[in-house]
Length: 177
Ligand code: ADP
Image (cartoon, rainbow, N blue to C red):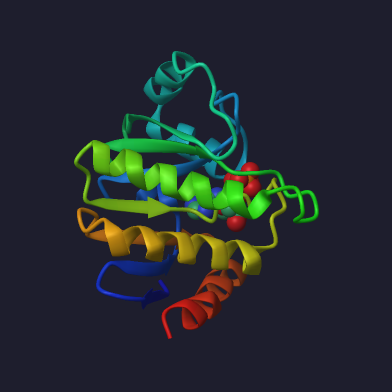
């Protein structure tokens, strides 16, 4: 498995988010929170029906926001369901919404006393956000957050395929030179 350490608090791995043993994993959810394909489908399959049961009671989630449930059968104790923007060319506030859902996820983690968190590449699958741009937004937002919030010990980006891994590794060189 590929792994790259960005700083003492941030790392990139190529792999499957459902297998992570961080306190929380983040789901790239849709606004219904009632399940979908991609990461969402994988998390509900691996975590079992308890997660969807909890999601049903949350009443959905707007793009740019996030909500938390327990982790069901996953190793992670919690799942933070973050809703990224659908990419519509880049001038519809997508970067801001994407940054907000990373920030909200981290805030929720801190509110719950969590120290380690794993993110997928939100919005770059079905929501078609170009992965190189998304990687820059994701890493910049996490870096800014960690500068003011020392409670989070580890942020791990779990990239499913080689293309995403390389996009994040390149963005990393820009942001953590
Ligand atoms: P979105 O709807 O936010 O675009 P997707 O789940 O369609 O979310 O895709 C987001 C990213 O997650 C894509 O890069 C996809 O390749 C990746 N992905 C899919 N399954 C997994 C998994 N099990 N672990 C980590 N990343 C995954």
